[in-house]
Length: 405
Ligand SMILES: Cc1ncc(COP(=O)(O)O)c(C=O)c1O
Image (cartoon, rainbow, N blue to C red):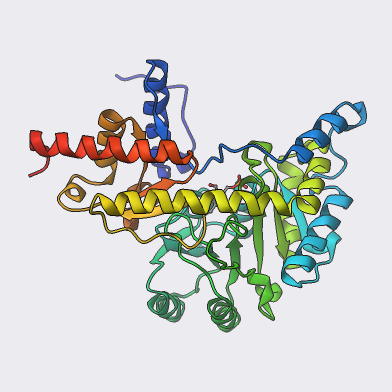
C-alpha cells in the first residue's frame, strides 16, 4: 500500500505549468557556471543602470532609521501618490485624485496578481489577448477564474471576437486584460482602439485592466497613449505602470495602478492583508525618478532604438522576415522554415546550446506564440552583433547535421 505523502499542494498548483522562462534561465545559469559567455536576449531585465539621482536619493534616505520600519501606508506614501498624479497631468493631461485614484504596488506584476484576486474568482471569466505576458493569464488562473484567450491581431477581428464572446457567454466576461505597447508582440495601442474598448466595456459591463509597463519605451516619434485618456475610461478600469522599464529600476520593485477609485480601493484592501508596501527609502527615491528623470528616459530610448535597428537589420541580413517593433523592449520574430518545425522551445534550446544565446521561446507566452521568438534589447550593440554571428553559425551547423529535414 503506497503511503500518502505529507506534502500535498493546493489543487490550484496543478494549473500552473512549469515556467518556461525558468527552464531557459536555469540553462543559462548552468552554462555561465561552466564559464560560457551566454548573451542574454531572453528576459526583459534592463541591464543599464538606474539614474544616478535616484540611486543617490536612496543612499541618502536609507541612512535615516526612520525609513527602516514598515512603511506607513501599504498603498504608497502621500508624496509618491501625489507625484504620479502630477506625472499623469504632465504627460497625458489626465487629472487623478492622488488619494483615491492612485496606488503603489511592489512592481506591477504584484499589483496585477493581487488585483486579479480582488476582482476574480471561480465562475468569473477574463478575456486575455494572446500571446500574453504569462501573469496576464496566470493571475486569473490562480484566482480560480476562467481565462478566455483571444488572438491579439488583427485589431478588427480582436474587437469582433470580444463582441462575439460577450454575446455568447452568460454571464459575460468580467474583466478584459489589455497591454499596449504589447509584450511580447510589440503591437501598439491607439486612442481609437481604447475608445472602442471603453464603448464595449460599458455595453457588456466588463472591467478593463490596462498594463502600460512599456509606456515610455517608444520609437520613431510614436507616443503611447494612456488608456485613461479616453473619456469614460475611469468608469470602467485601471491602468498599471511601472518604474522597472522606463527608469531601469526592475530590481527596485515599484509599480503603480491608477484609475477607477473602487478598483483602486479593492486593490488597497487586499494588499493591506498581503503586504506592507514598498521600502520607504525606495518610495522617496521613486519620487525623484518620476519627477526629474525624463532626460534619462530619452537617452535610454535612443539606446533601445539603436539596438532594435542593429538586431533587426542583422536578422534581416540573415534572410529572416523581421518587422522592427515600434515600442517596447523586444523584437517578436517568426522562426523561419524549416526551423519552426522543431517548435520554439526546442529552437531556443538549440540557440542556447549551440550559439550561447538565450532567447525567449514564443510558446512561453501561450500556444498563440508558437512559431515565434522574443528577443530582448537589453544587451549592447556589440553583443547583439555577436549574438547574430553565433546564431548564424549555429544554424549552418544544424543544416549540415540535418537537424531539421
Ligand atoms: C507587460 C509587462 N507587464 C508587467 C511586467 C512586470 O513589471 P514589474 O517589474 O513592474 O513587475 C513586465 C515585465 O517584464 C511586462 O513585460
